[in-house]
Image (cartoon, rainbow, N blue to C red; front, side):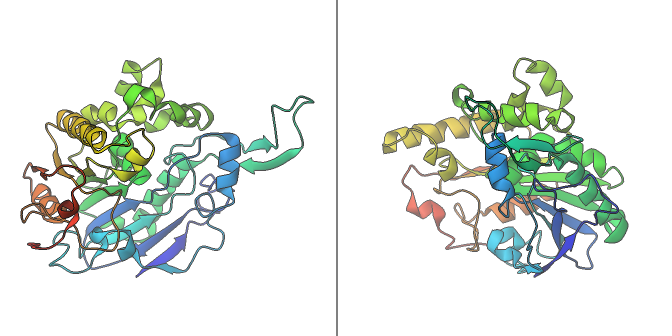
Length: 349
């Protein structure tokens, strides 16, 4: 069980969720000097109206935030069983709530006023709400809060991690997070289900809203922005950001990622298998010097079940090997649909 901490407004006045409420994190402390800093996921908001709607939910607000959380439901990397989770079981765990809707990038000084219908024929209607785009300051506040109040100043290792949009954030902004944790001798990045294809710009184009409205420029790799000057939001795409990574990276990715496939046009198995081949090929090229575990399970992120395995090798065992300075590049065999690809039987944890 991890316990809630609201970041105090008197210390971090700029750090706000979409609705203006304070950011929240959940912490499980151990005696270790090693930390897992896990970024919550849940999409992003792509318009002012969509952000306003999000601000009235737990994905844009911390009002009514529970006092504690069972992190195990968020993935096997939150198991305290050393057999099941050989690397991370005794790390300090930090679960960072995602309440800014913009991948922890927002850098807008004043609240943005949203109208009911700004395109109405008779002119904008009355204001319907305000939005705080302050994700950058949440990021900075989280690191400072952990360093000054919860012992992270003595950290020897920090693994920045996340799933879905938390993994997306990890993969494109790991350099910025690493800079914030400059005193930590060793910082690494571990992403689950964050490698998305950008076919024809369909994935990156909606993120132009984040770039333009949330002022995300301070959160992405400058070298990538220079290369994609016409469409800098393409730097939210892992394949474009990874060449500039300054920390070791491990990606756990399904080539049949259910979130990506649900948003696509594949209706036949042959199409799904081709999509999987494209994901695998792209990830291998982008991470040729990094480590990965590519599985064939139709999934997105991981739930409370034990991690799957491929011929006796598991993602969490591969993670431990990578942590100990081994380059691990594993691809689970199997074509879609592959029920056996999701099995945890025969685990060697």
